[in-house]
Image (cartoon, rainbow, N blue to C red; front, side):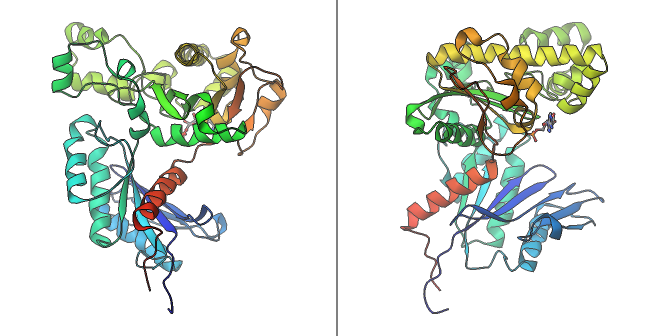
Amino acid sequence: MTGPATATRVLVLNSGSSSVKYRLLDMADGTRLAAGLVERIGEETSRVSHTPPAGEAGRRERGGPVPDHAAALKAVAEELARDGLGLDSPGLAAIGHRVVHGGMRFSAPTVITDEVLGEIERLVPLAPLHNPANLTGIRTARALRPDLPQVAVFDTAFHTTMPEYAARYAIDVETADAHRIRRYGFHGTSHAFVSRRAAALLGRAPEQVNVIVLHLGNGASASAVRGGRCVDTSMGLTPLEGLVMGTRSGDVDPAVTFHLRRVAGMSVDDVDVLLNKRSGLVGLCGDNDMREIRRRIEDGDEPARLAFEIYVHRLKKYIGAYYAVLGRVDAVVFTAGVGENSAQVREAAVAGLEGLGIAVDADLNAVRSDVPRLISPGRARVAVAVVPTDEELEIAGQTFALVAAGRGGVDRGA
Ligand code: AMP
């Protein structure tokens, strides 16, 4: 190589307890170079599926045990190397890691140092299922490429702008502070990405618009975003609060917990499992896939219909609440699996809100598409939009921006 090569690639790693999702992007133009998933880590039936630059047609799958995260990342590195995109290639600028809980400390993407790792570790009690897996992914990636900048992008960061009166629960302050109990919010990279894209769809700067974002996937959350900054969100101390989700209850009277303890003899862990895994749509009707629920409703299934109504009623309450919080709303935006795909949920969620200036046009709402689009009638006071989310692209963008800023351009030399 004769001159310095400019590194523009970012590898995004999303490490779960038994899986690693990854995507390699070229941030010169945002293109996806490769992507894949290692699943069932630690089981006999582990699987690696990898999509190379050629796309779906070139997709490779392999089985065989992947005993731990170190083996999983080794498999990712091997797959990328087969495409000439190995972890040692000079084009790689950084690795961006999704980290679920950043507490109050991390309000922005952060270059990972030993000290930062220690802080993420200290937050484990607040996210016992997620942060340990994220940490394992980070440690493994650092061992593979100790010289490469690695960045943590936190699910909670976008919500750290919430005012204190929205973030605090009305419980004894000393107890709350001693145990770091407050509303943190999650899905932040999605809310950040989608609210910015919605502003672009309206042809305005993020600072100029007020947006309600409805992220409706298997997990679901709403946020109120004023001028590009989050002022309220529906998830709280954990991702359990707020909307009805696939398997999570969302809002319930907290007394449900001690009532079940007293009258049903359930342990705290039993109630944890009940509210996180056996509630929401699955608890109400046995299915958590909105497509299946709609099929059952078409067949006259009563529990499915009631589950849908409870789901939509909660959603509508949050739209109303965040309208009041924002005072003026420019757009209501639907995103994630249900929000992007279910015209019925979108229609039902805004039904009856014409008085607030919120409505959907039936024909526009019925169009299936994977690009950001408006679905409100032409002259509506509030735009209603569908904006596909892309958390990996957002993580890559934030990672690259940080690394580029820190180095005055990512110039890694020859
Ligand atoms: P996510 O967590 O964003 O991947 O969303 C997953 C959920 O999206 C699934 O559980 C389904 O309920 C929902 N979903 C995916 N595709 C559709 C569709 N075509 N129509 C309705 N819901 C869908």
